[in-house]
Length: 317
Image (cartoon, rainbow, N blue to C red; front, side, top):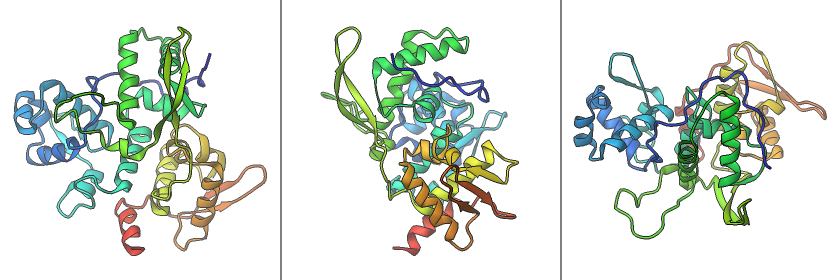
């Protein structure tokens, strides 16, 4: 029976629900940005949100969930949302990618969802951050969900866990079949990343055939040097804030690390770190080693702004 490592003790609280069983749709985030810009209280009046956004009540609740989980806006405690700097950089006046056409934006949304969401989404923490195998079937992942949920003292039903797993799968893989409505015909933005791909079928314990899903662990040139550096420093800041050094293995395979979240091969991560270390103005140096490579932060290094990621592409266009 496939099992994943035990959940890290550092993280105690996870979200298993709240998405109303809907994966985020392509048009939702730009709509939400415009709506919150016009009225920061819009998501605290569901009837008004339904009219403004043109979606049903359950979808309004789902969109509010994704706005938070993807780092677009956070509730302030006074029944309104505050848009993030990330949201302004992408969707604001003169934004870098207001219609989600740039793969860099999609990878940044994936990074936010997989590494920054607070509280973390259980499926993302478990499948992206800790799942130790290159592939899985729905029944294998669901059985692991149930075991981990029980270890944490929860009593989640199979329906709740199954819906949460299905939302994870549908976030990265289109499952449309037959005739669907216009809203349902639009895949979520992260499907375009092709991070999760069907790779065959195998029988489960009940003798039924199931789709095998594989993580696309290969070089991803669309994850640029500036983006990778940004994510390394973001990971470093949140998981080892007081440390001047960070091991290669942490960047490669620690839960919520760039190597793990982006599913990058070991050699690709090593090459990226070596190239960044040689760049003038890099925030860290990298010392390779046959045993344990080591990153060392330069004095007064700061997390670079999101704008640097898009400006880098423009400079090399």
